[in-house]
Length: 388
Image (tube, rainbow, N blue to C red):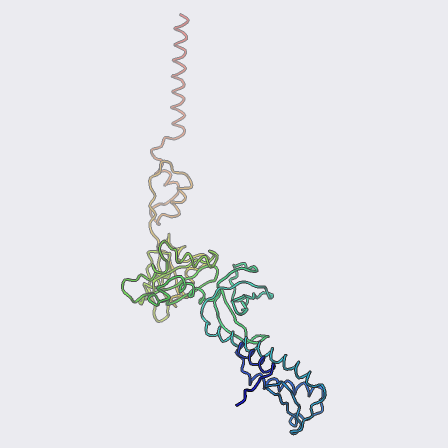
């Protein structure tokens, strides 16, 4: 059987289709439709159903058929060639984009390294390797400042339809970013021996993460913190040191879990109302500010983490004041304000009790006057003896 020699058109078509992962038949069918559209543009009065385009896959020769009869106008080959070239390039671009999107579709829910390319209004375009991703303003950390060529870690959140087709959406504010960073920095989390039960965040300010391990001998909190805090510090540095991270151990007992969630506050006592999902928490007065946090942030995050509405009250404890060498008016006022009711009645009584052994100013002046009189008397006697 004699060998069939392929033309340059066929060889080029097959080479491009193989390299770019584009099916040859799909490209040829698309080119035929484009050729017919080009012919119809020059002949707007034709009945489309009566015409068809034919393309030789070996030579690249194009024909226009009307009810099976060749009606190809003179010089149409050049138009057909240009149309075929444009269609092939467009098809290649579409297939490449589809392949990239399919690749990233598999990676959704993971973190990747990216570089800030440019700003599109409030949104940021991020280079994530084979593609450019969009980070909308609601997915940014508001306290962070971004600049071109800045290297950042982003979370692949979703693929959605945009103005120019499908686009990859990345995030810095999603909880998935924090989970991905722990998987990257903590081998026990990546292997599954330490499980992340819950994450709550106020991006750029503070986060709380509850971890658990069912394997004996593994400390879930210690594994996440790392030796001398090296693991959690590496994660905090990814947020430029702006976001504090509280790591607590997840527990079945809601009372203990809520107490741990209010970390760094200690000596916490919890009373639960399971029906209304309300936890009444009592903390020492000196721990009250820690339990509540700045602008209520700590208790707010603890409530989201545990699923309970948390009400905090401070325990009143007696104030012990050591016996000072000198009691000033300010110290006396503090004791009056802090002492339990009934123990101290007034500021004057505190001063009287604290200064009862201290001589008054009048007594000191009298003693000083007596000393001066005695000294003058001694001096006068010495002068008289010398004159004699």
